[in-house]
Length: 335
Image 1 (cartoon, one colour):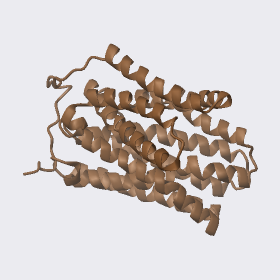
Image 2 (spheres, rainbow, N blue to C red):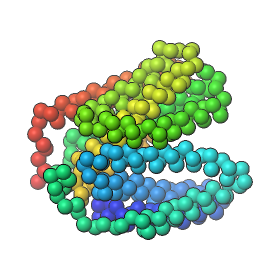
Image 3 (cartoon, helix red, strand yellow):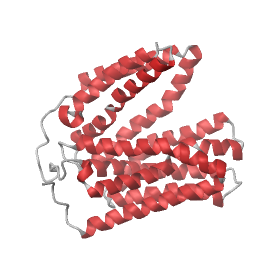
Image 4 (cartoon, one colour):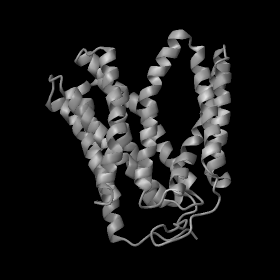
């Protein structure tokens, strides 16, 4: 839809229809209707992500693209930090107000987008500093380099998502931390991103290749899981691991999105970004399953070594991609 109709209308209609579906979802009272409405809401709502990422690429230049994605992540993490607090207050009054707040927020976002962001349909004028990238491949499924990138992104994302699924269980069962403390630890992740990531990306962008920074981020996340075993029993490892995972996320993720956007051309960027988003969805779905089963059957110590192994595998994959790019010419376009 993004490639056929454009990133701007897809964003607007995703917000409008998503807002209306949230209002409808709050009125559902049976399980079948709840499931059907949730599925439709997910389809409509998730259409926003690749369109939004394509929009960032469209309105930015190659020099500012990574910082632009970092700024977009700042907004997401700010909402991630504020949203649960607002949601808790509304749930205390009545759960039905959550659906109204979410629905109205989406509708207002659509109005805001229409009023304050111009719908440009023209492609950027090619210049030496802002070239228009041709579509090297008609589809990302023909782009072997990108498919390899997606596989190793998924491997790393499976390790990364343990922080939001199994790690809180580990904190509670092993270190006996209370739910409010665990909530503060997770909130610190979003707040650090809000206050640090933009400055960090501004300072490091251009000093190394994007894949180099991606590998650095992968290493930091892997070290976080290693620290759980090497600093076993030391409660301050909770803070150490949070810092390592957060800085790993900040260093790697903006450059991952930039890599994806720059592999694509203006006419197929939505497909590339959607496939990139799919890799994160697969990881988010499988990470809790893998983490809980390994922790229950073998133990947390083994789980952390396994997750560190996932990071090593991802590091090797990204290193191989970078080596390949430096020694081979650009891939030919599809016939």
